[in-house]
Image (cartoon, rainbow, N blue to C red; front, side, top):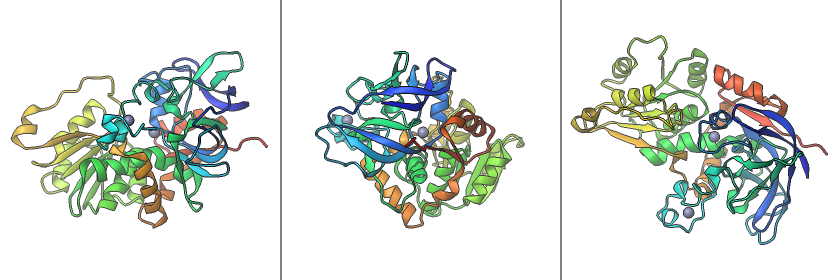
Length: 371
Ligand SMILES: [Zn+2]
Ligand SMILES: [Zn+2]
């Protein structure tokens, strides 16, 4: 079938163009996309900074309606509302059996290479160039073919745009707080970087009962989003002479937890330096994914600090995504406030620019396929 999609033919190239999408095969599902979140990982991939390299169709956060199914499908049927899980774990490898579905051994060979889990693709340009599926998802398109392990049903009262962001930013941020760090009520917390993932970590800290919660960012516009979502205190790190010192002053010796959603050398250093002795720095962001970062070894040992990495919130998608959707339905995760701007697919370039300028908490593409 022909459809419109966000195509990256080579590093730095972005076009919304017509592409060919082949029918779903055995254990695959065709989803009519309704919403797709705009994430830094898409922008990193467009720039060639992550493992998946062009040519590919972008997008990994997404939700929509099952249009048709291949053979052997048991988890959903046409008409079902679903969120796309970009961590299609096999649930049978030793790592999955250990409960670490976010680290499934199949992902490195397939999903992170932007292939479907059978190692192939259903996408191509109209001039015959094979396109890959970013994170086995490729949700920035009118339709997506995904494996049934990428399908998680969503309740009727959850908007598609909310489900879309739960699938990545919210799972990553809230999961870092609840699953990876195990934050507890009354513990102080700093959230470094207030994009979609950082703001989700902030919501996770609220959910965990952390107090106080300090939001740190270089842009006042993003600190305003953090305040609106419940940050107790904020620090503009571009205007601060010593952020770690300010954090220590605001939290009586340093926060118990620091969540770094940026993942740059400087913010990783800030996270580990600012937490109090015995505190925990949890690194969530991917900016330095291909860099070496210096760590102050003395602080780790002499101050008994913990430095944790958190990939995709340490989630088991088929267990945790429904839980997060239920927390939203119960009013415990106010995700409507996280989505501050909506765009048509054609405006993806503007959505990326707004994200970089700090003008959105989370932007979402609203997809309306032709009749
Ligand atoms: Zn993402
Ligand atoms: Zn596995």
